[in-house]
Length: 134
Image 1 (cartoon, rainbow, N blue to C red):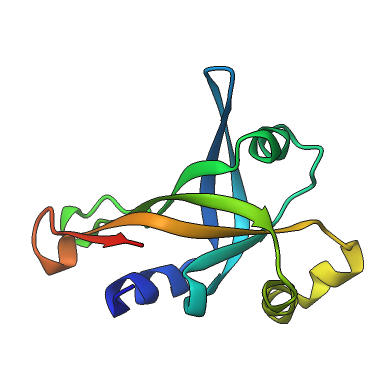
Image 2: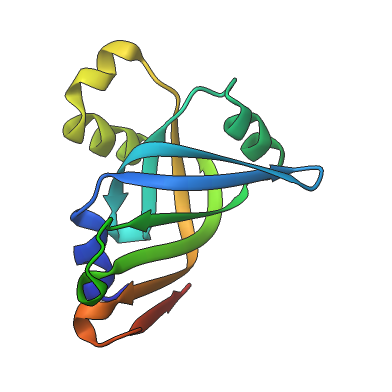
């Protein structure tokens, strides 16, 4: 994954994830950390939430991260898709390093490995899009 992707991802901390079941979708926002070594987001979410019940059944998801701005020249956003699985020990350590207060809550942690991503960054030119494919 190129440095433009990494920079954008590290500038933010909340992703929007969409799950599906039986032709219906459900979305959620989650705090994340990013593992550059395997292009994965690590996030916390209770396994009994609607989106996690969907993801456990069908782990392939899509999502976004967006910079909220009304200035056309500053628009930036990431669209991605990938597979969610239980977080590895390395992923858990990274999450608790970034969010130490979360350890007291003993959350369920998940790892979303990115298969495809598209970054829109108007600072590089109007409608400039970069792609990542695993």
